[in-house]
Length: 267
Image 1 (tube, helix red, strand yellow):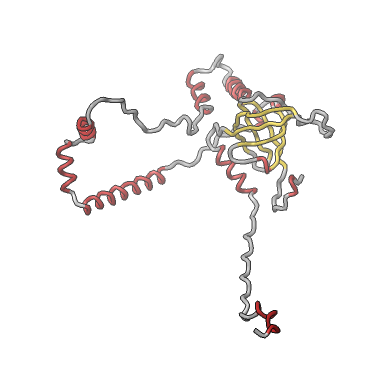
Image 2 (cartoon, one colour):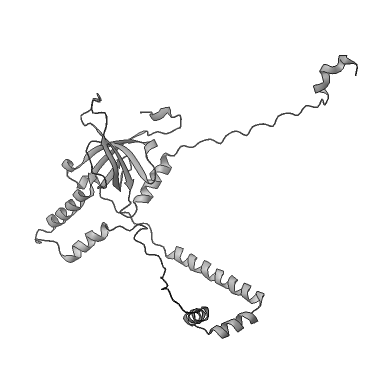
């Protein structure tokens, strides 16, 4: 399938998908855990905490900024300066006298020392960084009756969303799980933004029709999903050759060419 008559050297144009709801996956995880432990009639708090931790959102929205709100105050500027100096561990009068006594060279030395300390701390953080954790649950763990078919093309895939044709109707806002059927399969979680039936009278011959147009926005619910998607997009990115550099036009050596038509006028 060649979408849009593209001439780029891409080997894959069409991608098959397997789609199921996040609710079905969670229910299947709970059921499989109970089957693995027949002596348990219900899951204990520890097991539930592990499952909850796996499906807890760890994106940037849940991250709390390291900021503190300052309450409004009718105090004068001198009192505020005193409180700020006390919080920093000093006296305002002493800090003012010290600031006036410090020279520009001392300030530059302190700034250089602070920068070196920051660089050292960043280096230690990179060395202490843990390898990327990848959590994937493939479609093999989901009952076939709960899995629907989907089809997309490369031009409708990007790092934040996906447009595809699906065989099942989803509700807008519903959480779904999408598995890309490629040689190196991977799974990404997403939320449905748009789902509408299209071309009901289509004459496409197929055992499983894809009668719905779906738009999904990736949520990257589990660790490693964003990395796997980025690796896939980079692997199929075509190598576009650099544009040739135009050659400069040759400059004419005859300066009087523009006046050749006036030679017979005897000026």
